Image (tube, rainbow, N blue to C red; front, side):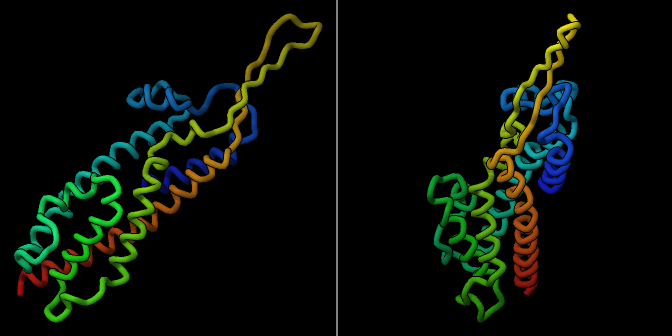
Length: 219
């Protein structure tokens, strides 16, 4: 939801600020975005500041809750197939942070958990489209994550302009900031939009695996 709102805010900024002169600096640079993350009054663009802080906050919460959930379903799967899963239980948490290995290791764990949690007779069936789709969107999120958490206003092309007073006047100069969307700014917009289907697929994966484990646990 935060990513979707950020994309909407970017579109509003594109319509109202890009290519137009602003009498004040509406959008923070890279340093300002991070240095004043906790100061509501430091930025003129309150929506950006609120959404950027929410992205960092909910992103951290999502990462922690996901690791807890994934470790839990791995532990439940161990009860269904003791000793038959490829990696020890702690890899359900550690595996996500191992460089390069995190591009395939969590998927292997997810495959084992899915098969162990499947109804009898389906233990060796190929991973379903839902699981494959979740992994594809996860890889996208893993690669695009740094860009999602980048203050997108720092990627704007900003030009400072000064208008001098006419010759017959001695006062005063006017200062403006002119904003343009760079290719990388457009890329952040696309990435924020694509986060939405990635979240929907992940939610479907979580729901289906949870239902399967609950049903098998009861039986």
